[in-house]
Amino acid sequence: MSGLAESAWPCHDWTMTHPTHPHNHPREHEHEHNHDHDHDHGSELSEAAIRVRALETVLLAKGYVNADALDLIVETYETKIGPRCGAQVVARAWVDEDYKARLLADGTAAVAELSFSGRQGEHLQVVENTEGVHNMVVCTLCSCYPWTVLGLPPVWYKSAPYRSRAVLEPRAVLADFGVTLPADKTVRVWDSTAEMRYLVLPQRPAGTEGWTEAQLAELVTRDSMIGTGVPKAVPSQAPGAAGIAGASA
Amino acid sequence: MNGPQDLGGMMGFGPVCPEPNEPVFHGEWEKRALAITLASAALGEWNLDMGRHARESLPPHVYLGVSYYEIWTRALAHMLDERGLVTAQEVQQAQMLVQPVPTKKPAATASQLQAALAAGSPYDRKVNHPARFAVGDVVRTRVMHPATHTRLPRYARGKTGKVVAVHGAFVFPDTHAHGLGEQPQWCYGLRFGGAELWGEDADPTLQVMVDCWEPYLLEAAA
Image (tube, rainbow over all chains, first blue to last red; front, side):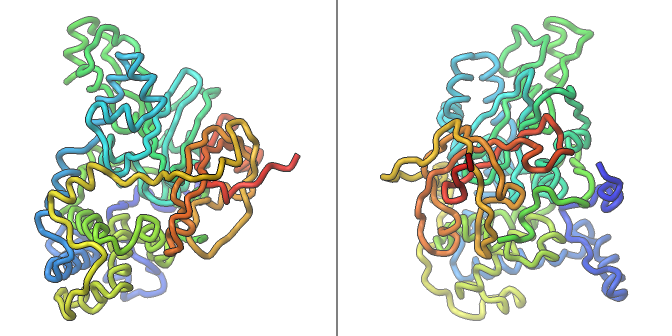
């Protein structure tokens, strides 16, 4: 990774608006500086939050949206749909070869067997990590992500560092996640440019023979299904049933 | 369009910084941003590709300087204003100033929205013409720079790759984003070698998979 990229914005907070043209407008800079500190974490509402509140107020007043429908959307993605859905899919594929074959052949239909379906999962493709290939998913053009199995994307997935670098230097990106792959392993990066949504099927960790689906699902992280992580390690000091109990903590 | 959304291969944005135990939402406003974006889309006044085009049409210095939910809501405000549904002045004053106008669909109820989210909106379509390419074909992407919406990223233009999947015919974003109809086209999964995209210094183990509609593709020169 080049020194330029490292020094440009070390860990910029991509949930926030950051100052534009700070050097050309000293007065604005001062304002933006203060603003940045208060931004959505203090008592002052950010410009973005004010705009959202205004939009919601007018949309409701004009009858273009219903308040209970808005609440339902939030509740759905905050509490019902998330990466635990995908973890169940992965765990099922790890224990059931037939299911895995169906999953790789038609992801949409196979996850529907577990009752996961809907928006941003209409055309789901599952890609399998193997000894020779590591898969990683990105959307360089926007934020396409398999909502039905992973929920809403994390901030980093939608942010410029990930979207710009994943297709160019995926190993450097993986290093940001603390992941190092064997030098000769193929790194296959899936850019979600069309309506296909990609889910990575990570490799089943060694030492999990005899584990139940529920126990295995505990090892499956969100990032391991995006391809920027690997499943949680199995505690090596505790084989058998004790290991299982430790792993599901 | 060669807009700020087309980020693949750009440099200088710094490291990827995953947030430990990231919450689904960072504050109440992100929840409301998601909710009004999805609920407004249910009015049928714009489609998915028009929404994407509205976002990528934000000025680059804005797009690259704000959070993703802010990109969404700025684009939403623009689309609502453009259609006379919510004016910029109404947003500024946070109150209704002009009477509502009829929309293609009425405001969705909670149960209607729940059903719509659960059903999704498939974008594959039946077409009568056969696919021009098959798995295993070597194809070349077009060099093109439309000022309008397209889903062929700059880094993958004018490049030679192999067809690894024929996904079926899908709504064509390049027309759909501009009110020119769905005009479904065959869509393919293409595999590009790292060196083909980035040159000799590329990671030799890199493969990049890009989904491309047929109009983006040419037969590779023999």
